[in-house]
Length: 113
Length: 110
Image (cartoon, rainbow over the protein chains, first blue to last red):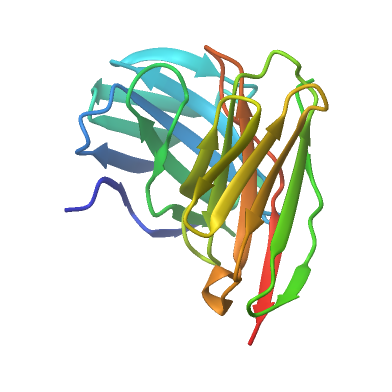
């Protein structure tokens, strides 16, 4: 009964490749998020979607493109991967479009070589 | 630039002691305040939320908020080795994103 799930858990790839990370939540929440946690453990918002609509788009390279096919899913596609993209990416969800209490997925550890 | 500041630690306390974790924030318009716990290699987990000045208690945890001083704290009573983790303070202003601090690492020794 996983509330927020992500796939894959680990992703190792080479510079220049394109990859996707998938997220699904079964909590019935309206809002989903992508966060990046770097090697210094700093957790920073990247994107937020509310009912399939982009709400927050922080200063992120346009190589990163979120897609929300429905309100239970939010995927992250990354083009032309760079070494600096190596991090843990967390998906999260919350009950409405106020970032109140968020529930995080297990994370995807991306390593770019 | 909205900022949330935490002492990175590590904060070391003996088992049974009170651990005190502190957080300051720069945006006076902030309305909601949260403490997340993150074990090594795991995802953040919400443990406390507080919205008004004063104290809020939940079991061994007490969150304290002082909006005039732009200060949030988390007290953990009777600290246990299982409390050893990184504690992330998060703040938001209505309609915007959660801003996280860099976390304080707590180590509880038995």
